[in-house]
Figure 1: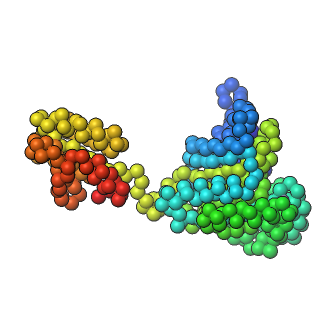
Figure 2 (figure 1 turned 30 degrees about the vertical axis):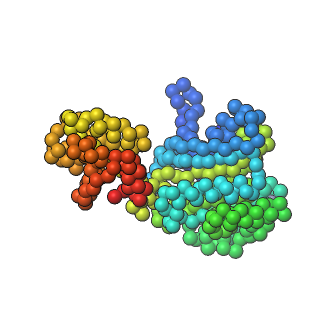
Figure 3 (figure 1 turned 135 degrees about the vertical axis):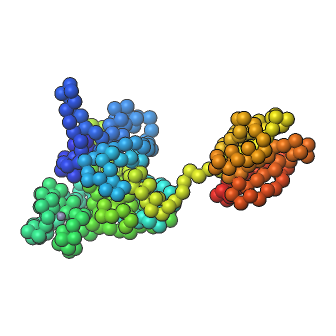
Length: 374
Ligand SMILES: [Zn+2]
Ligand SMILES: [Zn+2]
């Protein structure tokens, strides 16, 4: 499936996929990416019969034999999105928009850049390929060994060789975006237009081809300068022929994957804090148990992390426990508070204290949460 889907001249299949015989002599591969598997599931379960447009996502471990480095591992996690059933350019733009939103919400949008390109289609790529091969042949002796191999099997890949020496050789190479057929040209123009409508910033990078054989027309990649030489954090493209290649009907598709480990490495680079939730410690006593538990229940039902002292100790010992627990605020439910229909809120970070009417407590806590803690 991976050989047929990804292409057997790609780096992924040629060099990086873990393939071995199990004890029963069956040949196994650890999945190197998610798209081929989703397509297989889509075909096997005839999911195309229930809807014209299908949108999927996945999240999970993938495996490639690579040299481990910053943000790059042999077992890594990808989150991916696939849309089957439309070749409309608006879909391409929307897919890229969702990807850029993931980077926005992760707080690293200023560390990444969207590169886009068009890789043509079966109508225009073969002629371009010939042009490119004849150009590359004239540069052959100066190309690296990998590129000499690629030249015959997968010439487009020479364009995104990471070696400076190869980069220098291909600056004047003919480019796919200058050789698109009218349909591909128009498609690419529309994709750019919709990206503008969505407010997504991008750069056209005619040398970016992505490693996979199955892409047609739109290819895209988010890159960063903060993770060393291997600078893609995620990418994808349109693969209109893939579902058919893997034995299904002729249905277009587009998708992407983000390397979660690389995303996290970037967040660490920028010291983005996530998942920090407000923690509330409720202090109450034997004679205010009913009110204490009532408040605990109320806060928890609002999804607020709420803890208390199981021993129901003295005020002093409860404050100590609140402090140790890392709570952001403590709410005191004493007999005085009970009588007056209020709670006393103590900010555990700066020690300030205030009183608040019982019925306003949820609002108060939510306000604190919405301004990002205290
Ligand atoms: Zn074309
Ligand atoms: Zn090279």
